[in-house]
Image (tube, rainbow, N blue to C red):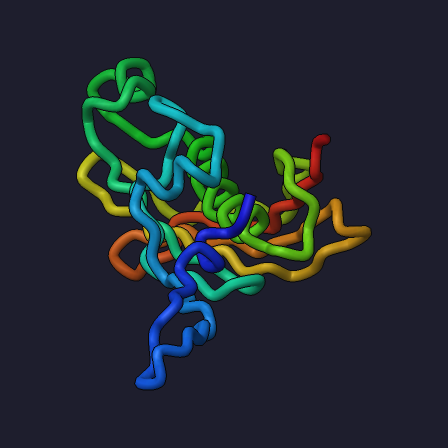
Length: 170
């Protein structure tokens, strides 16, 4: 499977009818359909609506529009809907999954949580909020393990942050 960035390279004809390949155009945004090509998650567990910024091998910024009709709000909590912290962390991890799956020098497969460190929740996230999820790659070890720093913000204010570790499952 090629990365979406590789799929965007173009072949153009120059004046002498010679074909030349342009350097691949780096895709910096991804729609939900493109995210579904990268991640196995589906409703109700796909928690990223789009990627609004992407730097290959370095970082990604995703958006999660929090809506009242999501199933977790039926019980968390009646009369006072709060997005569970574990789902905020999962949303950050899914943005991290976009970074990991698009790295051409890593084996293909499923990256799963291997650990979560230093996670702190700073503000409540409620229906109507738009989570901006920024995940930066810190390190890759043995081409199978990744460590990332994640941040979730609402209206420019920090909602959650922490370190996320991933492991490749064959």
